[in-house]
Every structure is written in C-alpha cells, then in structure tokens.
Length: 327
Image (tube, rainbow, N blue to C red; front, side):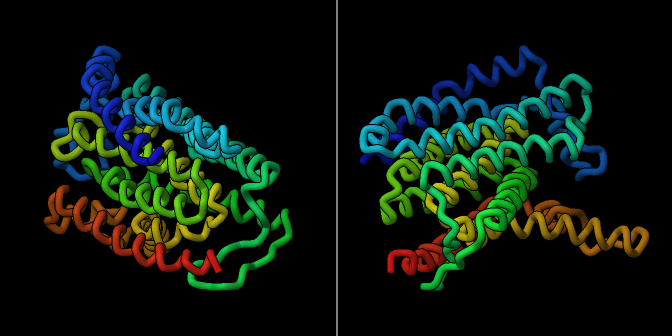
C-alpha cells in the first residue's frame, strides 16, 4: 500500500514541479552542451535545459516524507538511506553539470575527480549498511541456492567496484531522449515487487517513489525532450538502482536487471579499446550502443521501446532468479 502511495505522490509532485523547474533552468541559462563528436543531428538539441533530474528528486523526497515514515516506525529506515546515497551521487553530478554550464562545453569534472568522489560515497554507504545489518558477506547469486561467503575486505572491494561501475553505467545510458528513464522504470518496478517479496519494505517504498518520479519526468523528457536530466539526474538514478540492490542484500541481481546498462558500457569499452589497438578502426558506427543504432537508422523512440522491452524481459528472469533467495 505505501509503495503505491509513494508512486502516486512522486508522480504527482514531479508532474507539478516540472514546468516551474524548466522555467527556472531556462532563467539560469542551464542549457545542454552537445558533444561535437556525437551524432550530428543531436546538435539541434543544443541549449535544451539540463539538470532536470531535480524535478524527480523533489518528487521522490516528498513521496518518502509522506509514505516512508511507516517503514521507520517499523524499524526500517532503508528508504531514506537509499535516498541519501543517491542524493550524494546526484550532488556529484550537479557539480559536474554546473562546471559544464560555466565553461559552456560538454566537459565538467575530470574522470579522476568523479571517480574519487564516487568511490568515497560508495565505501561510506557500504560500511554503513554493513554496520546496520542490511549487508552480509554472504553473496547471493541469482538462480543458485548456495551463497558465496567472502571475507569482509574482499566483499567491500567487490561492492565498491559494483557501486562505482553501476552508477556510471546508468549515467552512460543517458544518451537519447527518455532512454535511461525508460530503462530504469522497469528496474524500479522490479525492486518494488522484490521489496515486498523479501520484506524489504523501505526498499519497496523507495522503488515505488522512483517509479512514480520517472513516469512524471518522462512527460517532459520523452522525445522530443523539453528537458534533460543531466548528470544530476543520471548519477542520482545510478545511486538509486545500486542502493536498492545493496539494501536488498543482492548486489549481483544488478547483472540481469541492468543488462542494458552493461551492454552500453561494454560497447563503449570495446570501442575505445579496439580504436586504440588498431589505431583508428571501430567495431561500432559510434559508441555507446544507442548511438550505433541511431547511426543505423533507429529512431530515438524505437531505441527506448526496444531497450525497455529487453529490460522488462530480464527483470522477469531476475524475478524467478530471486525465488532461490527465499529457500
């Protein structure tokens, strides 16, 4: 019930604040700078307001304040822990967006600066979850009844890698109108259902709020987009997805539910690596994968629908995979 309330409130608030946020971003001259080496037709999007992720962040926090208190009274404050974790990543993204806006170019913080900030946030969150008992060193493997028992230092390193890698994979997926929102929506619904199944009620409430916020945001971000979420929004989404998996104590479930995030990241790594090894040759027309498909004639809407459909299929498979978690 509270998950549904969180979804409805986040959707309504995000929808309500959408136009005021867009007008505020326009007054701030927070226009998106398009990469010169990106698809040529994307240059028409130059100047579209960015940092629009603020609108669903507002929607989610209001939803949690309304629907999340019951979880706290029941001794589960995980919905607010996930929000703080995601918000810290969102703040890293906001700094990155602000630097881009100030410089008027598509280059904000350096890769090293972002990595260090993200790693510090990840380690602090993982240690906190371990201290509060949400995480155990018993690593759940989807579709397997046995768990891998790892030494805490090894587990910490593994989860820090998953956290930073996962958040940046979500960020990389944000490349065409509505794509990362369409892909993350079924992931949020999956975690809302998983939260109910695993009695992770706080995670369920947060996932419901995330789903509602994304639906509201898509009203402004679906092609043709009136606003972009920016790194503010995409890093926040990455933190949300990773935080949900960690609080549910099944980080490896990110492999099936995040199959699109992984495919996008792998395509980019392969492209860069092959380009350097062959001194200029390419595997894909353009990386990451969504740009390759665009260059092949796929519309932005088609990419969104296909990628979301693939995510839904893998979320269904993941749902059967976590049944073993209950045994």
